[in-house]
Image (tube, rainbow, N blue to C red; front, side, top):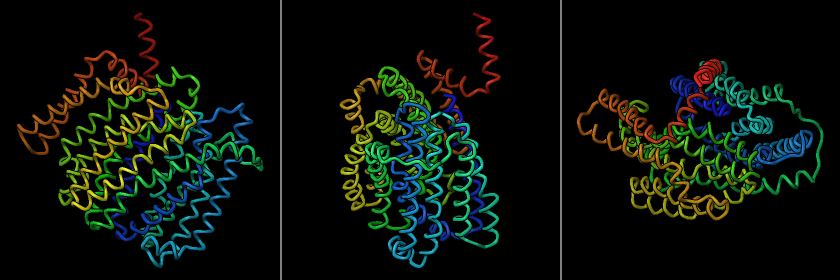
Length: 488
């Protein structure tokens, strides 16, 4: 929970600062500059999967004999990552023009070649990050992230003011990766040294190959809908869809990006104790449901308000997409999002890959058929087909991990009932009046009503109080604890 506090603070800070820098850069740079960077990001994200090769997850999940054994494995992982990243960078430089043509940006081969210098930098820092996550040292990762999110103010924005266009964005990204690598290395107990053993690589690779396959399948799941819209519909619809879903994903990432690395690290340490493993998983799922379920229903009900505030009046069509994507995202996060962390923590990443594969074989034809019948059929079919992924996880968790489906549903029953009743109240309030002020007031009433209903469940009171105490400053928490002991 302490690690979660620092991880959450990191995500909140990033989600506050990043939009500010984007607002400034959007007024200094042409949209084409962001298009170039989006293309580069697609290439680097794909190459990064092979650079990491799943070693980061292995270092977090595996139980080592001692510190020396852990550092030896870290060194083999680092040298392998670094060698792969240099090889990939060399291939990208060699075929940069062909890659630029392939992704629809002919003439930008040199830009792609220079931008991909971040591959060896990412490979350098990924091992350090894995060791920090393994040790639950998210406070150090918070410090590192703070340095990186403020780099645009000292590098990217000044370069944009000088008229460097997309080079300003690319240079800023490279400096962010460089700062991560330098700060993590300085503060880390482990330092890279020349040690390599093929036996260690072979053992790591047996785990990591499935993580690599899983990463590729996740990349396909993330991008396949974008490819289908761009090829079967139009850039206008692609812009509305991607902007809407990205906004919702960023909102949900405040919770998921804070929880996932800690959950994986925690479950990995408990992998040999089934009772504590299951208890920790259910506890985290229940806590997340307290926040995510009302958030999804709330955004679904008040999607017009959310769209108007965040995107403006010209994005009216985005409202419906934002609403349905938020609703299905909340269900997906509570019942399916953390299952992959369970599989990996148990040392069985092939289950996660199998789950992605079983989802892809349904997702791709669903998207193709939906797009054939129009944009809105595509939107609703793409959103609700995620429930098939939840069903896949239910089956895999029951058959392979031994976690019952009914227990998973009952675990979040109080928050689900409270969120549903809150949603009904929100709907009724919307029928009474309209307007932004009334929406704001009704949202506050809904939130108060939700927690009022939630407090009727004794188990929920304990979770909410426990969560609140952990997020309080240490001095206040100690004072409250001492008063509690004095009373008893």
